[in-house]
Length: 379
Ligand code: UDP
Image (cartoon, rainbow, N blue to C red; front, side, top):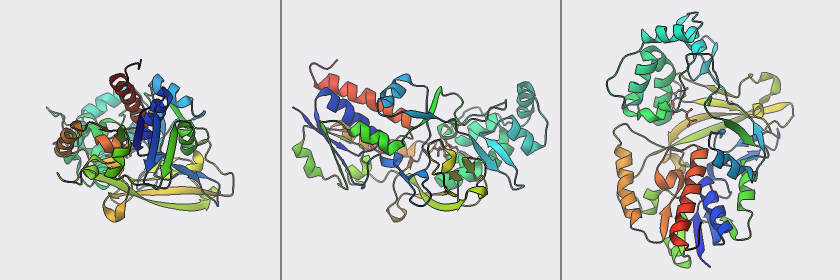
């Protein structure tokens, strides 16, 4: 029987481990942190009983049936449609991403139809021949005023770079609506949270007789000789000792505090689009299945930073518009392609800005392909 090592007990590692174990391989999963579930990890606050996500809000959304079906083997779901507001200096709260109500609030207009909003914005946008940067995309769709209001300061604190330096893909993730749609992920057919939390879902994914999990265990090269193959979600540059240079990641500092329930706003997430250091606050009890029911509730404010500040976790690979970091990753990947017994997986292994459903999908595909290549009787 083949023995496989999976480095990282996050989403990519969990999917690989389960698929391979169900095929009949013996899988050992290690993670240097003292818990499973990677950045999806959640926990319950002792004092308020509120569930919170240790590494910031993880809101599951997808239109991919295969992903929903697969995860649904390990969790029930509580439907949840995410909405975000930005608080203006006046104290007014407006929907984000930008929609008709946002436009009316910023410009003092009373646009009522999609056609009116389109015509109005057509007079505000700056056409660009090529859409390469985040600024190009936003100027071409909503114009400089809305861009500078909602996106430029936020992006600078989020990424440490100006919109002109960021790849358009980073903001293309967000909707721009001409109607009053205010859901953050309106195009996804499935939006829900694991009924008993993410960590419980991971526990069930790992709950298989062929899987062993060891937390608090960092990877060491010498381990490879004990296994037939290794799937590693550790950062590819760290694996190679940064010999070609470091791949930049943004991290986030969290300030979590308790408040009287009566003082909580009605929103789950409020984005700070101003010049201050923080990007958003999340009121956990407003998420289904997260409320502890007590008199106090919990909120977390996020302040992005470089991951190298005091050994922070890596969150977001930095996607510069000139692709300079992707090119560096490509050079590491060439080294990785030459590995016979090792494949890099997941966000840090492949230097991609991925949502959870994309990690699950890629991992299902990757594990299936690997089985077909390496196991003669794999379907
Ligand atoms: N963004 C922004 N202002 C906002 C929300 C998002 O400028 O109020 C930009 C920012 O560059 C951010 C990107 O859009 O990194 C993608 O936002 P999203 O909410 O998808 O980020 P995530 O949920 O992954 O942190």
